[in-house]
Image (cartoon, rainbow, N blue to C red; front, side, top):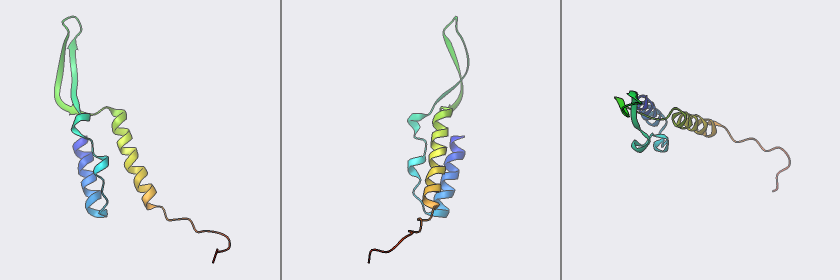
Length: 84
């Protein structure tokens, strides 16, 4: 999921020349995916994949969408008399 997200950011950066580095998921936000375990023995099994918390990924995705909505909006036309 994170690799796909980064590939999409790369494509956006290439086509728009926008600097989207701030939206990338840094390695310290990834953690091993838990696939199971045994409560009695205190063991934890991992899948071997690195994942990010769903809510944090949603924040990153929302930030990218918000950025391009903000950048893509045109300034509002002023209404009224000029000051010149």
